[in-house]
Image 1: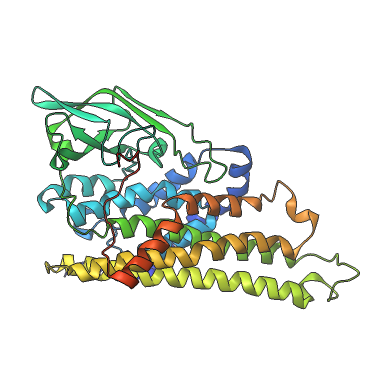
Image 2: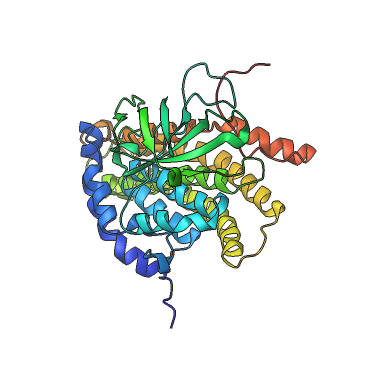
Length: 405
């Protein structure tokens, strides 16, 4: 009899003790800028990275919806962790959505065995839009990889690094490939030089490749012209992390208020927890957490529908992919300001003692602001408006660089 995929309750029972353990020291890690190697290893040991690997490849066989519900819970424990693993789960979803199914098995088995996949996609500097400076050059039966990447989120914790590169012998779009490189291969250097004021522990810094030997089997090609659910998936991971931050804000507000006895002479209750104004603020924070999680779930259902069509071998209508992309953009526009506002309103529940560094309550705003600065919301709102007014299809493959226009 075929093995049945787990229920959400079964998955939550498996991972919640790990999430609790991660949350215990989240503020301290943030204070001391202690990289989250232990936390990543706890998740690895629990097979969190195998969530979306099918049962017949040794994974847990979780659905898309289950993954995002768990990412919200993990984000509430420590918002660095979902972002660290964003590229890992994104690589698995890329296999399903864009890579020849005949090539899936080795990578899925590695993920099931505990391998973590990082990322090396974005280049900084004055490179032209739509071009890559990272080159893959023929070398006998294999290849050599050279280039520099930044925003390499998760790569400090990874076993394999998916690298976007241009084949030196093919400057066309078809020559753009995904190269899989062992993180500790000769010629690979990972530098922890991310200096953003939020998401400090994600390892989002520089990765350098100098004449790195690449096996032919580790070079994957994919179509960059057709609509893809991958852009929605990657953005939804940020939104799930923001929804987790919203839950952490609610949790920390309650934990701060409940034991307090000191009140203001001009307050409205015998204790802070009995003060209707404080109750109102906490209620607003709880409402933000609920609406953020609900928006994430609405987008995840669309991605889940796409995945179920794939599993049945049925064609995915372009209209469904466009709809999910637009849902993601709408969710982003709605969630970002609400969570940022909640991270500020949190401080309305207490006085100066809420500012103590050992509490590190400011991390919620800083981390939310950092997540919101990826894929800026103003452009997502414009895409939604352009589609509503003119029926314009969203762009699925986009890049950052200097314009030649």
